[in-house]
Image (cartoon, rainbow, N blue to C red; front, side, top):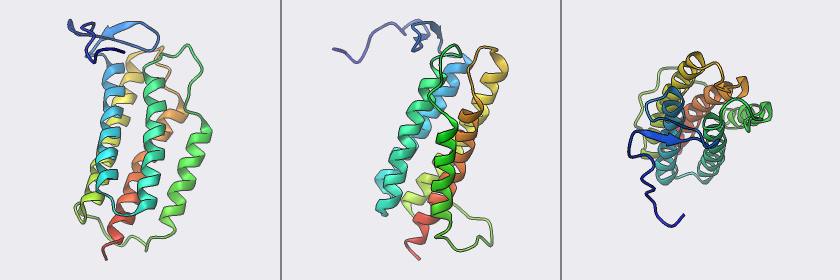
Length: 172
């Protein structure tokens, strides 16, 4: 790509991975756009986290988000990138970090550290992405939104919560 701008989206449409053009206001674009926001929020978290193992986990999440965006931008007529194996891996990572934390005894107010706060922001954006993706699935019969994709988004918000707690524990 020689230029950042292509001018193909100047009239309110964008291209999917299939080559199809859709309105930028479509439920599909809203869903994968919100997933892109998660990726940026996680990048902010990674830049602010102090624990290397948290940073490494975030990179893995960011790579998964690329697959989720590809699935959402592709349509339902092709094999999906996000599989049950991704869900299993997410659950194992959550369990690994959660096992290192003390039991949760009360609600957590976000903001203990910059990294933890950014992870809490990523968690809430992930919840919004999950809702947007469900709306997209309900709006379009050929959405291609699979169960592993939806479960991955749900687990991702759980993992952001656990990572936020883990990062905040580093200052106690």
